[in-house]
Image (cartoon, rainbow, N blue to C red; front, side):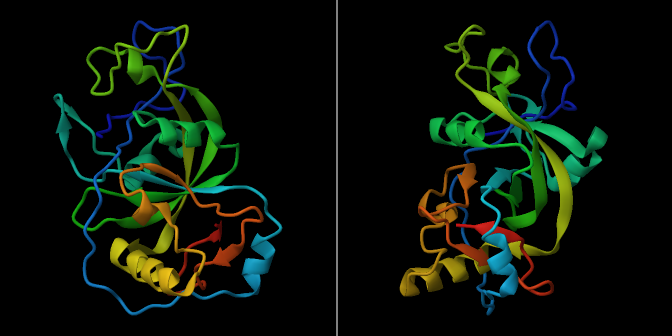
Length: 233
């Protein structure tokens, strides 16, 4: 699915009483992986610290390259998020029920990887955090919006969005090919990335990074080459 341009979070939508919003997210097709790099996941003492944090982590996809959907450019990259007022935007346009339910499950201050999708080089570009929990997505009511849903009613909206705020860029871009290498290795060994939704549910644009009752933790990076963040699976 596409995504629409965003307005600054909190900006009123035209002729509507509901909360303002911004761009749209996409239920994107599975991305083909490029050349596989030789890299390895590393667990350090920091992963034990992560275990103390019971918050969920998320991966959220957006298209960094221009693409028109019903005449609307749905491009929205992490650089676009960083350029927004207060570096904050609403994550609108999600039209998949499971992805919507994940949005509704998000809590303030939880962190999410910003994933560039449907582009020349997909992968994780940076980190953001949830600054407003789920509320009705205004784009479902806007007839000129690519994500208009005539079956959704303002007194019983089907679709929700959250507000996110830029935290930082990754120290280096983490490409899909590298992620796939780790996923395949963990499938063979039973590691924590074996069921990563990025590969098991490729079209899902909002994905949890919490797995299992106790959410075994893994630090997927060192502070240099394999830098991610403390993530629960």
